[in-house]
Image 1 (cartoon, helix red, strand yellow):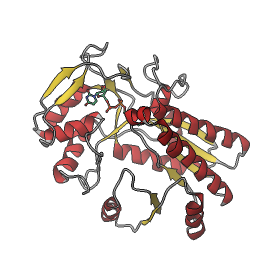
Image 2 (cartoon, helix red, strand yellow):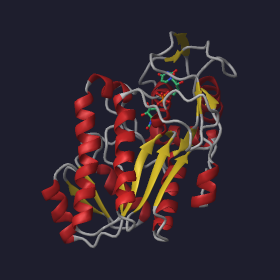
Image 3 (cartoon, helix red, strand yellow):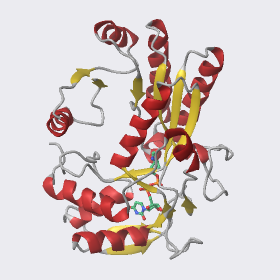
Image 4 (cartoon, helix red, strand yellow):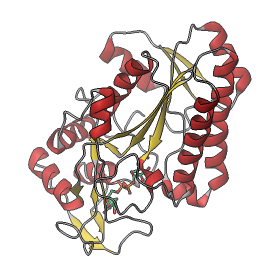
Length: 310
Ligand code: WQD
């Protein structure tokens, strides 16, 4: 296996930990997915059979402030990758897409056939890359492409050796809660409790990151069987509210999570969660880990690595 990373939002230490966990040697090559010459050298030196494309920026608020950086990294990077894959006749690709392509969907749960209406630059870049790959697949049936629409990936590997290490103050709920639990942050601000949900707080489909990883392995296996183009939600198929997550985290870890209710966050949706039927049918995959597992593993990572990978 070969990992390419420009480390703009990760650290090389992760690879050492992956090798410790798996007992496998991983070839790590620092470089940028937008650099076609660099990519060409990698494809020349390694017998690549399939690519899982994770390389992209993923912070919604940052994408609003700096859209060109997102179009360059996420769209131009993907274009460079598939052009080099074509040159080397490597036509098996798993793409890390996102539920943000659905935008403000009224359908609950959300199936893959729901209307697509992303409303922020991050979501636009994910939909644009999906369109590029859809057109590529239509132009050349030799391509096998899995577009995986992630809902809310959270948690950490059960070993506590690898996990989420966000730059600066976390935007997302779970890393923020973990840092409050660790005393790195004072209290959680809950963005609104007046939504039409079970307790008024936002509801999301949280998926354990190890379940997410296993979804990629399942997708690779299906590519092997010449699946053509496959678009699949990766989610648990049900949602949890912010308060349900906070209460579960406290129960599972014994750590207090002080919080206060504040104004809604602009752009937030009340509730969204996946229709996970297609993943079960096409990938023979479904989530195995529940919210308690997510909270336990997130805390295990945070408590073992208070400074992340640094
Ligand atoms: C979850 C809930 C907030 C922080 C994310 C990523 C996006 C995409 C989808 C990959 C919401 C509430 C949060 C806080 C809070 N991922 N919240 N206080 O907004 O669903 O989107 O997942 O493609 O990249 O942005 O996730 O974790 O930010 O919020 O009350 O300090 O927690 O209002 O209801 P979201 P999130």
